[in-house]
Image 1 (spheres, rainbow over the protein chains, first blue to last red):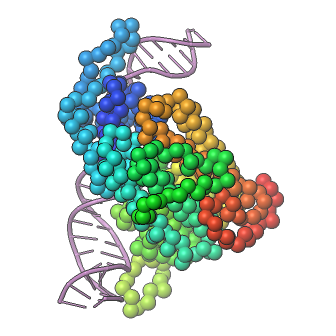
Image 2 (image 1 turned 45 degrees about the vertical axis):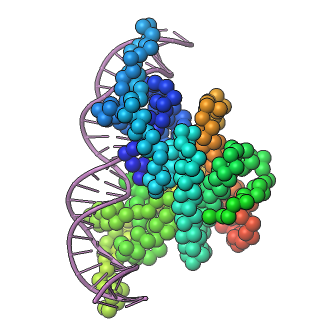
Image 3 (image 1 turned 90 degrees about the vertical axis):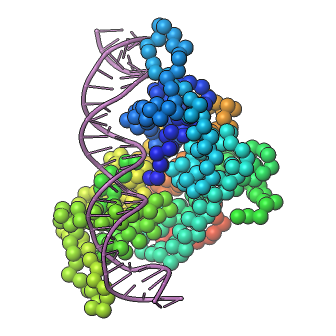
Length: 204
Length: 204
DNA sequence: GTTAGCATGTAAGGAGTTACATGATTTT
DNA sequence: AAAATCATGTAACTCCTTACATGCTAAC
């Protein structure tokens, strides 16, 4: 999976922007934030921190380490780290909306302009829509009856992507309307899809 | 991502069970089947084929290669390959329902007993339910208002997993009731899915 | 006093990608 | 004649995980 080098880096920088943290805690927060999918191991995090230290993006905080407490290495963002984070957050190209990157990018949306947010959201939506067209075409002229389970998997895949697209559309609309998505997309007791009108805006 | 060694192997064996194929075509089918997520590169496939050749799981088919056609290396399953596939398909432990493996496992469900299918489906559902409990707990006592975007991401994650659980529940029910899932979870209005009965095998 | 959780790391290796390299065949 | 797509591979590299190694501190 793509998840290019800067992924952990961005996540760490983003979290440290909210205050200094040490590795162990950082990992917990990261897993809490993105842990619905995969969990990050120490074997990834600690080396990444070392690397960022060397690159001077973070530094060991001159610490409020309570004496009684076991020594922990608390990190803080440097000037360079702040600049790097800004740079990463203002990227609007494919790297921003690729599968492995989008989530982290999205989680720190609060630190960017709406203009950039919109571009990233729309970029991702377009990407998913392309994917959708492709797999729907496939679905049509494939062994639909040859392998029922494979077909069911495909069908479910299509639905998942469609769902994702709707989510993005809601978010885009919310951004444009200066409001947060108001929960209405929730599937909980929902019979289904509350038919909230998506656009006063041309689709796509 | 887990996607342990046997993942490609199982997919290749499964496809070759439906008839001999050459590398290029194999890759196309694989991407068609699972391509909603990631695409498989030649750099992965060809070495895997070589390895399987060495392990005697597949062999170059004594081929129906039309003379006019450019020579292609067509592979076929060997006895050993067939046995290995059976072995892989009858595994009911965690490896069968782990994130990176489940899809492929599911796609070839047609080649296993209902008993095994049920165990794998239930295993996966349990795994996802555990995940769900964990992230819902997190969601409750987190910075819900600190970072609205992170919170929204979390909320969406919860919904996605819930959806996945419902899908699995429908499938399990369908297996038990000897019928195919009848679309009820679908968000599409689309009425189809011929509801052909799966088997007359007694319930687990 | 022992288990569970806190805390930091390293080494080895797995699984896959990208980029490179090569060439035939079909379509435009 | 060029472009697309068929077809097969290799080499280098990336990102990440598992397993190992170590030791402190809080709770039971």
